[in-house]
Length: 183
Image (cartoon, rainbow, N blue to C red; front, side):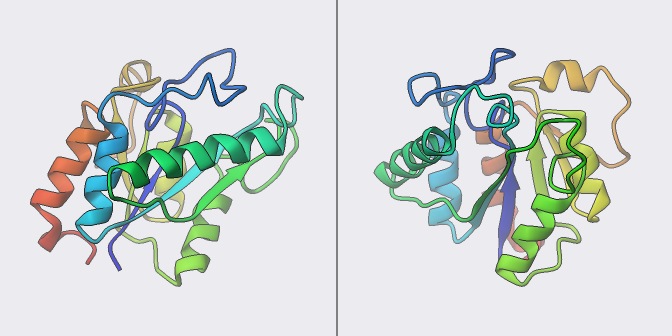
């Protein structure tokens, strides 16, 4: 199986320090929806792992989060693609869960769902926590310069981190070189 795992905020859609609290605030980064559709049409399964502590903080509820993810699925479907499993951590940073990145719980959930080993699977994110979660399960950390990516790039990165301008650039690379990547 050809699997790619994405963070959401800052990779697929615009991020906000004030949180994405509604479907109206969920605004795709230019090219991201098309990139997911292209990957899907090229035989890739695109899963999403996203921290959503706004739920624990009371900024929005699960129905709103589900509506955002339904919108993501609709937009990708409009371009002929589909989104695979979407997993999220609803906990706050101090709740001690195993799912909140940089912990690898969500990535392990995706691995169990698809019955795959995550070794070498690309995990695309924009934060240090995303990259650390990738390393924790032997996935390939991939940093995009959207969202918090520019700030993250100024920090020490895990060895072997791949860096791309945005998700569209990641998709172009993967589709061009898919014969040599995890599948």
